[in-house]
Image (cartoon, rainbow, N blue to C red):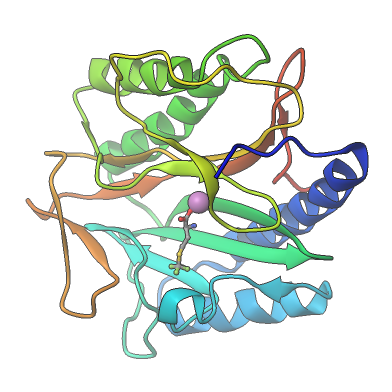
Length: 251
Ligand code: MF3
Ligand code: CO
């Protein structure tokens, strides 16, 4: 499928979808505390999304059984919320959420500390977040798609972390996953030329140890092969002729 260029009307709808998702994440971040279950987070997230008149896009997506992907410590992404999975001080928890507003998708992820965490874990979360911002310095009309990938890779590799290659970012719009795929690791080719009106979900998934991942028997949860912590940071962005617009921030 070709990469879609959104019209001014579509961009307005994606802005509103993104703003609402940004607020969902802000509220979820405030709610995180030791003693709560990963299922509690899913419940709060689903209620927030529905409360804004939106649809949780992950629920039933290819059979995924929840509204929020909740991935703890060595879980990279797509963790399934469970009532008996209780967060404890020192954990890190990655929340990935998506919603549909008037037919348009927003997708974003954040990794949060649960209470006091180690310096090493704090740095992993900070570097993962910053790698997104390094990547989107290249997300402008006239640059090429893999300029983003290469910038993320250069920044993360300098910190000695493992970049997950099994999963990538993606275009987004009337569907959660549109073309193009956006790797978080260096590419030999330049990739397609970025144009104003493209909407992309850029989402580095970064491991404290090796880059390798495997899937748990639930067929969803992706974990690090070596058991080391992993972090995730994602926003839906709009390509413009100047700086990219980050759509999934609260206003
Ligand atoms: N946010 C994820 C992505 O960017 C989507 C999660 S798929 C789900 O691809 F099924 F787990 F919801
Ligand atoms: Co995504």
